[in-house]
Length: 208
Image: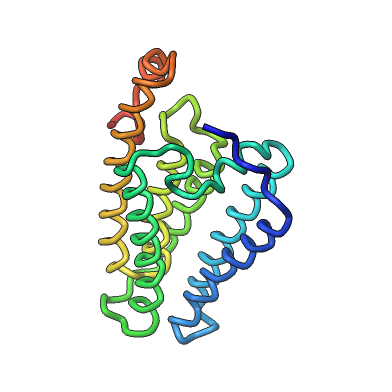
């Protein structure tokens, strides 16, 4: 498998536009540019993504280039490619549901302020785990744990209970992918069995 080409400044500029499109889409679908919770989550999403990309660009450009690989170009199986695309589709549906439910159509009842605060708090560990700051010796898949916090926290923050349904489906898909990844790593990566014995939990400390 060949090494990916370094990420160019042009690609980074494209990434910036891509990231900005998500909060812009949410606010557009909400029909309310003063939607506070939408701005909070949108700012969080752009901030953690931009910080991570910028840090990798300076500190670990090889890993950044690996993250930019198109699904299927790194030797992944067809099953893994399908999982990646399914996650992408689910993520987009999750993003779209939040403004449509919480602000434009009100499909589900508003949540109490305390629930919104819980959702906002969950975005803190989500950011930490997505950046791999705390989890290397706690669980085997810290970035997926960060995604789990994000998928649950953002709908609570924005008050979109319908997006929680998509979040639960995405968690199921992540579990399927984790099982597939671990099977492949156990077969192909020397020392992974020892790593699994040392780091007991896949995703949730003390549970699984």
